[in-house]
Length: 351
Ligand SMILES: *[C@@H]1O[C@H](CO)[C@@H](O)[C@H](O)[C@H]1NC(C)=O
Image (cartoon, rainbow, N blue to C red; front, side, top):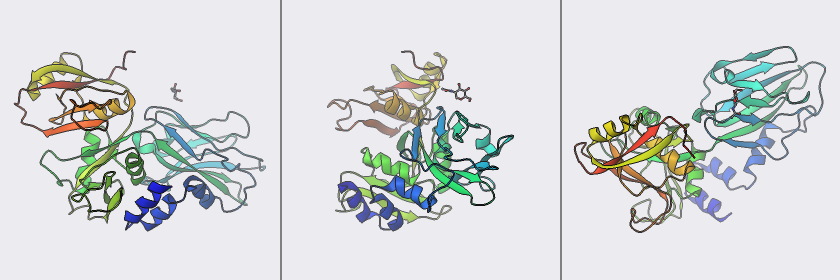
């Protein structure tokens, strides 16, 4: 419990979140909030109210009937974040019809493993699919619902403009993440990254328009002598205020590889193209580091003009930092002839 308690002390503007996080029963609280009474028809999720999967995977969100009313429909809705359409309905179904709605509906089906199964199958998960989902049984008398959280397994990375620190408006930050094969991270994703050791002394936008930064090793220049935690600037003006970005990405279908050499940016770009690939995006390098244990102790160009290298097994001569991570030399002059190339090939990793 220790880290949760400490974290709360610095979540000055997030007291409600703080309350939730300080409880070890976070998951069951969510379910309880959605199901204030004992359900007659739907089985309350006994254990798995959170399902975790990676981008590209298929996921099953369980929803099982304990009893069947004579007439009913099942409706699946995505609750958050970012509602995109009318109520964000994914599908409505009964025994005879299945009607998909919107973007998610195209990838949705009902599992129907048995007659009491109303579980939702989501195919080819995307980064944006993470969040809370509601399975609703509608019988016109006492509608019931349960809520399941889908967590996309991934990695959070800080991202700065090539023009320097604190240059992104909210929308620029959102675009910058998308350009690096990611999306702006949610608070929960940043929180999880912090528990896994993310320590970053520059504040960045999150998906909800708030600005935060995660500190594992407190130091004076990063929020004074507050204990470890996520420092919050609260909600900021999306049009006027400028910060860095915290991006989130997950596994990629392809693979990242390194070509050694003393290349300028253009030479690195050609080196990748000669191998039917392209200079890697920052998100792709992070995904390879996180999901394929990618470790390469050489700086290399990426497509955005930055030079980085991924370290999975920290050692003294590779960046000198005791934690695993992707190191960055920042954006360098593209004519500097000193670095290799990190390429991304859409073909899967050979193993
Ligand atoms: C995921 O679902 C799609 C469509 O339902 C199917 O074609 C594909 O084979 C599934 N992939 C995996 C890995 O199960």
